[in-house]
Amino acid sequence: MEPRAWRALTALGLAAVVVAAVGLTYLRPWQGLAPTRVAPQRAAPARPVSVQQMQFLSATQGWVVTGDASSSTLFHTTDGGRRWQRQLDGVAGDGWALRFFDARRGVVYARDRLGPALWRTADGGQHWTRTIVPKPTAPSLIFFADPSHGWWLAPLADLPPFTGPIVDRQDVALFRTADGGANWSQVLRTDQPQASHGLNGDGLKMSIWFRDLNGGWIGQTTPGEHAVVYATTDGGDDWIRQELPPPAAGWGSPLGVFLQGPPAPNDTSPGVLVATPISQGPDQGTYVLQSGYVYTRQAASWAVPTPLPHSGFAFSVVGHTEGRRWWVSNGSTVLESDDSGDHWQPLGEGPNGRIFARFDVVDPGHAWALLLDARACGPGLPCPSSLARTADGGRHWTLVSTPP
Image 1: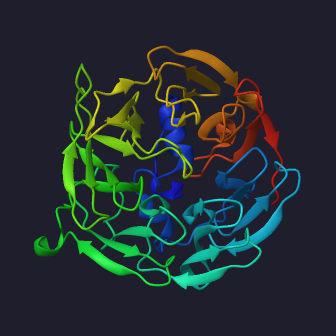
Image 2 (image 1 turned 60 degrees about the vertical axis):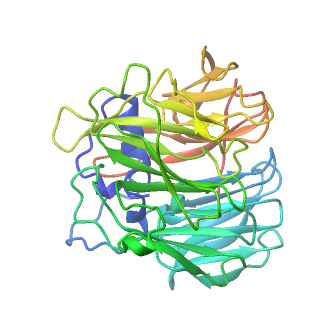
Image 3 (image 1 turned 180 degrees about the vertical axis):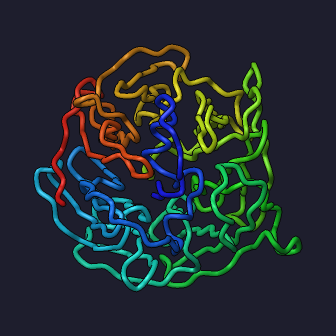
């Protein structure tokens, strides 16, 4: 992730703390993979190694990326984090995408010393095959429906120096593979109307995801009072712009609306997304995420959104509950709803007051979380992040030691 792009973001309550800590992967996602030219400056104080990324398949099986601003490493555990196996080394822990389908098969996007690459494994990470990628992009703009079929959305040009989280337009190209990334074909590009196939370069593309080999969506951050996704039913050949219905009371007057795709790579509810209005903060260069809204897909349309009780960045639908059990963070507190957001109650607390930044719920009893220590944040620097787990449905959380 790229916290350096937020030069003067002030911690203005939970939402701004989370944005400052998590960085700009969500609001300017490709920056973590673009070469950055910075003027010489005095060395910053050493920062602790943080957990940059995670994906867990069960209470025992999972992968994490740990690292700092200059290096990162992928580790694998099969015993719930008691022991870790080192698998891949990369540079800059902010540019990884993890997509494991089971205990053996997975694809990983990372930048090593040779540049950005896609890595494939068929034996749980004991052996890896490295392939080149179409173009550098953000982790959230890569999606594999299975080990063979994937989509790759990449910006055609870098944006000018950071001026804010809202962008009117950025042209992109879409690539597709049917052989696990060994070969890619360009499907479309938005800077050529005859080749755009319905996808426009408006807004800032934030995520891409598919429910199968045909049905998929692209979410974006859109200026003004608009929440927009693009939808396909033919595997990405053609796209239709869909403006989501506004909340009952309207969006207010935000700078724009930020759209998150499915909460986790192994999320069981691809028909759920979160829209969050972005407002100007009280000081120049500061921005605040307001309380979000959850959209659920019903047949061929999106239902009127359900408001979340807080502006917490971590949200998840708990698997195996028919989509009715939701979690959302409120600082160091986990709130739970058993009726798809109609009612909420406190569920559990993060260890030592740490802030929940992301959930990976693997079953109703077991989940993993990325936690931020906001007390250790510094100006222009990310908050240290750590890994925690629960074995009682979110009521109690325990920090898990990860390797450096």
